Length: 251
Image (tube, one colour):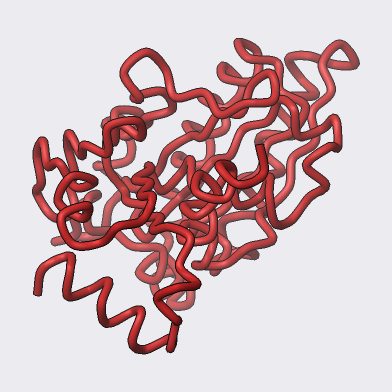
């Protein structure tokens, strides 16, 4: 099934009148140039330098936006959850932790606009998880790339001690990296979302507590930041992908 068939099926399934379509927005876990709509690298489905926007434009006469999934989720928070005029959301970060421990990224909204960097690569975090402590704590026959949040919960339900150690190490690494990002960018708020929300008690709350603790330790009263979980579920990415289309109509 190609991308045209997928979009056609969605239009048919949702009974969307063609004359009511304002545009097509796609959020994808990949290195994406949101201006040109080129996917430069997508680990999940092994794509490199795919001109997705151009391909879709062959079949559909609408405005098209292609955006990284983390940035899409960030924009969904900005547009659909919070007051877009709230000063807290002029400078904030969105940490997305996906289905596996390795699948994460950081979205940056600075000076009231999405920041993607000079080559749309800002916020990539995959290289943070090469720490040998993590690999040494994995259960036998498990790989970090495939170690999902659901597996974490299963092991914790079985009271598997090595996974408790792994999560403690992981939480320490990520909270430390977040402190560096907070110190560098000085945001007003950090939102954490993704599949990690499904492990709130086991994983998300300890991570938020660790970041807050380190923030208090390093910055005391000098730097204040609000940290919370996302209020959106798996719809955050598709909702956020539409905002680039919507922005054209609300300028």
